[in-house]
Image 1 (cartoon, rainbow, N blue to C red):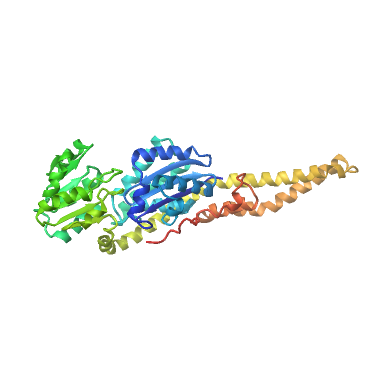
Image 2: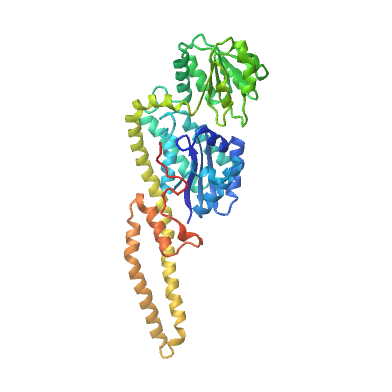
Length: 443
């Protein structure tokens, strides 16, 4: 019997130094999904990788084996032993996995509660999985329902009102550190979604930004036109470092964009002017050693969490409303998930009972020399009737199970009666249980 599992890490369970090691680009995500569904025990896979999380949603035959495969693959990507990742990896099953994705899509698991861009990130992750042909009936249902839930949360609550992004919080941090930003020279390295959000937040502060992009020059020019800024070639970055007051880095590069040695060469030219570096990328764009240079302050996505705490208080009431919506929607998913298993489970149980009766009759065939054919038929009918009556009450109760507990109870029933052919069936826990890799709930 297949199960849904979610494995991943986020800003709640691991620092940026760990997250950047297992972060996946779009191309790497596609290759990884194809690799995963090539495993015998994994039939569906979707990868969600953002600056604050890398998560895999999988449909598997053997959860324990699948966890081992994924953990090993992530460890190889990170160049570390699997045991070094275990502390930051969480694992969820079935409705708990679905609930987590619903919360992610609704902005409840974000660093900034209610952030708007995560909905688009979940959608793009699902679309990438569709393109990689790694989805199936369960993940298709899951992601469509999660996106619908995220949309309902933003429609029915004010959870996304006001500043609701890491970019906006970064601009608040800059204003707190440097005061009025209107006259500051701001350099944005990158031209993606985070760069756009940062430019918009800066624009409201009266800042004209300078965009630096390597591969996406046309996109950088478009952003510059939209927000009244300018662009500069990537090769001119060293010269711009001497002029800038604030540098925001948000590329998808797997390598550092700004090194301490490079920045150290222009620090003397700055004549003591302070420089604020804001690194919104994972993997990081800016060498952490830059913070040791005189006059330089570096803030990365983990460092912004202190600033984020100030934004959370006003969103708690809306977050509680959103959580109610998530729980309402997850009940519908739980009912659908359970309905997929009721009939196959009952059919398997009846088949197992029939096999037991047939086996007993066959084993005792040689002991009934004196029985007539009619008596043999009566014995068989009696045995099958007894088994049928024994299974009647469990069958009725299984059909009446509420959606929330159905999957777990069915999993237990299949395990107790050995209805799964998987050799590791006896090692499985109830559906929805958080695996020992890490218990979710730390915030």
